[in-house]
Length: 208
Image (cartoon, rainbow, N blue to C red; front, side, top):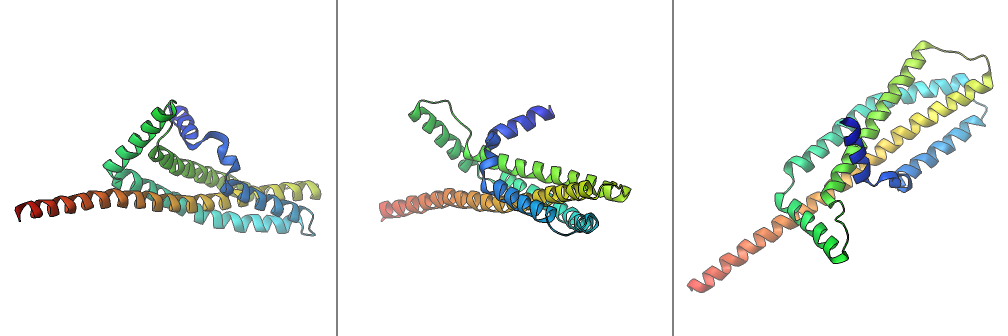
């Protein structure tokens, strides 16, 4: 059941299209720059391990809050969304499919909710990865080869840096989504109130 839900979430979100979105490739580029910079720097494996420890502690403190923040945003969208807005989005999606003589795609509401779900999924993966890294740090494992040790430390540091930065970028994306939905909600209420006012004014004119 869980696999089906995740697969559905992935499809609605756009599949592998997330690979070409700015939030992903910017975080990836920054991580690759960090990886090669540390790999070819004069830093020792132990100094990089100290960086891993510091970033790991920061990530664990930060990521839990990000998950709560994203879930709160998702709750706002699902709980306080306008029924009329949802109907309009579905209607617009169906009319577009009819005009183009195509199978109806996913509505803007479905896409927005999937973005929140994807963000939570990435943040949970980040949290799990940071816990695993923290476990390896506590085990105090050692490798005889300094070069291999440095390579692995650079790799793990870059991975946790990527996941943390990507999670932060997704929060920015979620903030923009909340703003967009709130403006769409406002437009629906604005049109309703405008219609009510116009109706009342017409009735007053008829009475006068």
